[in-house]
Structures are given as structure tokens and as C-alpha cells.
Amino acid sequence: MEFLQAKQKQDPDLFLHRMWIAGQPVMLAGYFSLIDLPQTMMLLQQQARHAADSERPLSALASGLGERIDRADEQAVFTAISDGCLLVVPEAECFEGYLRIVPVSRTLSRSIEAPTTESVLRGSASSFNEDLDTNLGMLKKHMLSDLLRTRSYRMGKDQNRKLTLIYMEKHTDSSLLKAVCRKIEAHLDKEIPDLIALSEDVFEFPKWSLVTRFNTTELPHNASAALGQGKVVLLLDRYPFAIILPSMITDVFSSVNDRNYPLLLANAVRLLRIIGVLANMLMPGLYVALVSVNPDVLRIELAMSIAGSREGVPYPSLVETLLLLFVLELTLEASIRLPKSIGPTITMVGGIILGQAVVQARLVSNVLIIILAATTIASFTAVGFHNAITIRVPKYLLLLLSAIFGVLGLFVGILIVSAYLASVKSFGVPYASRWKNKRSPNG
Image 1 (tube, rainbow, N blue to C red):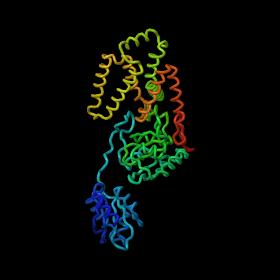
Image 2: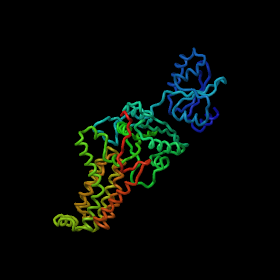
Image 3: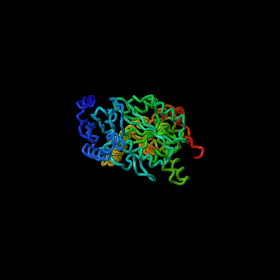
Image 4: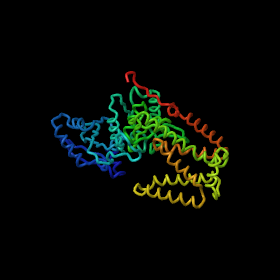
């Protein structure tokens, strides 16, 4: 009680309310912002009437609405009230400890809605929200299996957050599971305000990395599919996405929705994504290489057409390409920050006006406008927002090498990128390998 009274002076949101339950004086403690106190008191009185005939009515009350904690320390008390629980502290000396009761909570999380960052063609249209228990329940609805296992952790000291690890027994590789659990259990004191902290402070992934070591999804059926493949899924409190470990290069081109189509059509769509990713990485560098260093590779008609489109452009091809790429990156970033009601309109009109203006001003060529527009569209054929951002980075390395060494520099850049991807590992699993599901002997 001394700890709670001192805490109340620092936080007026904490209430200490005295009442009688089953003829015994008790003190109620909790947060106004998390608990509906009048409704909770009515619930306690109703439950107390049913427990009045018991020899120990308070213990009977706990068995219906919560649990009894015999030994209480300050950290356990703070954790309980931070979770939105109600503490019932009996004032009678014969009762040691306190009761942790599940109250009538205030509605602080949004309802289950359709996804906002991922499109669903064939599948469940519900998405995760900020409540961890709701997300876990949705995932269990999609994964009806007695092999589903969960482990709960509390991360951080100053900002305590709940983390739930989910895996499929007999499907998940034991070495992967042990590596993930070992990293989490060794860094329980680390704060997790964002995914960068989770990646660098908890999992200790390299800080300077071009590829993400995990995938995120707001769709429960994507997370359940990953569990079925033997991967590990993490749910973080107040984070409306599931975190899937490990990330593989096949995740860039393969989607769960592909399984709803015939095999031939699904493979054709995956091939189209591969072509889109390669086009995004290679086309700007190939344009600069063929225009500046190796124009003799082109047919004479095509070379003359490109030369005519660049007539009057005062910059070399590398400068005009970098200039237009910079403008496109600004446009993409602005489209994310603008309100949804006006964002698409402004970016479309701004892109058309800006493109027409730079061509008429002879700052860039018509061919480059076409190439970079196709490059920008191709970058979003990759599956997942993290992957779409990742593939936009290597094209600048290929662009610089192509401007210096031509087509040979482009090939060298491809080798460098391929070697880097082959060297990336997540918990011992190579990023460029093909994921193999470890199934049970009967499955």
C-alpha cells in the first residue's frame, strides 16, 4: 500500500478506492484510463454474493475473476496494473497477499478492420490490430492445430512490453527455435520502441544491412502460412503486424495468394515479379552504360533515336538519371505522408506536370522518362513493403558502376549484389537458400 500511495502522488490516473466485499474491507487499485470502475465494482459485488457462503469468500472471488498472489513485490504490482488488471488488497491481517482481478476494461483498441498496407485478392480480409491478445486469437482461428505453441516474454525495464513467440511443434526446426529464444531471453531488459531496436538490440542483426532479416505482415492468413512452413512468428504488444522469422529471398517473389490460382498461372505471376525486380535494378544502369560508354552495342536506328531524344540536354546521362531518380524518390515519400484523400491525386498530377515540364525544358530525355517510370512501377511488384524498399537500393550501385565501366561494370555490380545476398544469414539460415519445411513424420 505504501508503494501504491507513493505511485498515486506521481500519477493521478491511479485510483485507490476502499470498499466492502463479502463483509471484509478491501482496497481497489488500478488505472482510470484502463478500467471501467463503476462496472467493475458491480461485477465484484455480484460475484461476492455467490461467494458469500464460502469459508474464504475472497479466495472464492479470485477463483471466478482472477487469481490470488501470495507474495507481492513492487514490480509485480506495477506490471499487474499496467496490464489493465484490478488489484484487490484486503485490509484484514488474516489475509496475506492480494487478488489480481480481470476487470471490465475500457475499449482502447480499434476493432478488426480490413488491411490498409496489403491487398487481399483471395483470402481473409481481416487484419491485425494493436491488441496482442486479439492478434493471438485471430491467429489461432486461422491455425486450428494442436501443434501450435506459444511463449510469452516481457521486454524492457522502463517501457515494459509483451512479446509472444509462436511456432508449430514438429514443423519448426529446433536449431532455429533455440536461436530465437536464446536471443530473446538474453535481452529481456532491452527496450523495444520500434523494429530497429528489435533487430539490432535483441536479435543483434548487423546495423548496416541492405536486406531485412524478417518480414512483417498485417494479415493473419500470411502469418498462419508461415507457421505451417515451419517459421517463427512474433507478436508485439501495441504493434499491428506479425513479425516472421527468418526472411528468405523467395519471400520477395512468392505470396500466399498465389496458392489460390492454378499452378501455371501462379508460376507465371512469380516470373513476372522476378522480371519486375530485375528491371528495377538493371534498367537505369543499362541506360547509362549504353548511352555513355557502350553506344556501339545498340543498333544504329535505336542509337540515333536515343541520341535525338537527348539533343539539347546539358547534362551527361548519369547526372540526368540521378536527378530524375531523386525526384521520383521524393514523390514516393510524399505519397506516403500525404492524406489518403488527396495523396493519389496530387502525386499523379504532380508527376504528369513535372514530367512534361522537364522534357520541354530539355533537362532530361523522353527515353529516360519512360525507363524510370517503368522502373518505379516495377519496384512494387515485390511482395511486402520491406522488400519493395530493399530492392530500390542496389540499383544506385549498379548505376555508378555502369557509368564508369559500362556494360562490364553492370555485370560486376550484379556479381557483387549476388555475392552479398549469398552471404546474408538469419539465425544460421542463408538468405539466398530455398526454405525447407521440417514436417512431422506423419504429416
